[in-house]
Amino acid sequence: MARSLVLVFLLGLAITAQAAEGWPTGVVRVITPFPPGGTADIVARLVAQEFSKTFNQQFVVENRPGANTVIGTDAVVKAKPDGQTLLVTSGPFAVIATLLPKLPYDPIRDLKPVALIAQNPMLLVCSPAVPVRDFQDLLSQARAKPGALTFASAGIGSIAHMSIEFMAGIANVQVTHVPYKGTGQIMPDLLGAQVQFFFDNPNTSIPHIRAGKLKPLVITGAKRSPALPDVPTATEAGLKDFVTVNWFGLFAPAKTPPDILDKLHQETTRTMKRPDIIERFAREAVDAGDMSRAEYAAFIRGEIGKWAKIIRERGIKPE
Image (cartoon, rainbow, N blue to C red; front, side, top):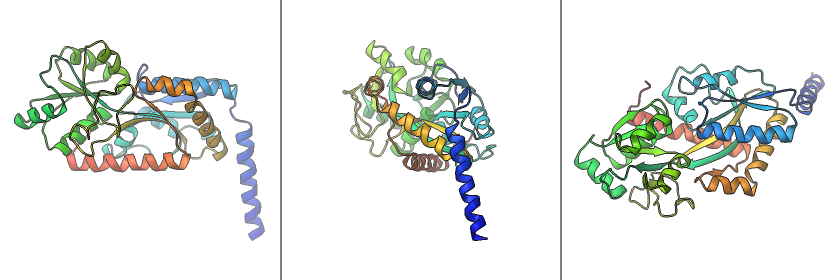
């Protein structure tokens, strides 16, 4: 009996090694559950381009937005676990794990975290026409006139929305959340001060800041960004423990052979350690990822737990 179990185990190892050795076979789909043009899409295309060179097969990005990222993510969950279908997603993955209790998949059980690609703090910005001097002035006004200040987001469950809720909970203020159907619709209203504030991924706001069209108030990282050295962290601005990031990472269906996952992780890590990639990301206040597979898995679990607590405390409900 024991000998039979050993033979079965060794046969399984041989099959896994054979699968990894022959991988990839033909076009590999890299699904991202976001529309084209956003940071997740940019990151997915960067990774796909580098993978295509390294593995000598075509890695094609497929945008599958909709249903709070569920449509694209579920397509990967249901794909054959042979390394031919991958997922590049971001921070909302950890939010909807709690926000949407009837997901068609289990985000921990049905997907394997492969590699953290990049992460960035959120940047709180407003039009220069909005009469606030700094972050403390914003909080003072919010306390003086509860609900009067308006904050945009790309929808309920977005990292911008969760940053609003996180800030409001810690600072004990009331502000008005204005959900949009995507970041692209927010910027014209923000520039025109039709909506007052926005927690943005830095890369989309930095050009407007440098052109003098947006005013940065605070950055939500643990330290200042070299791309915006004059912008204080929330802790420096007087709001302790308000630290949050949006992250971008690679996943695969749960039963994908470990050797394939290791190959993908190694190549992602190699790419993210390239000086030109690090420099390119740093200009946009983005940090290239550098975690082991175990560290990345623990990071994802931590993000799910963090947002679950805020969702419960703030009574956040899906649309």
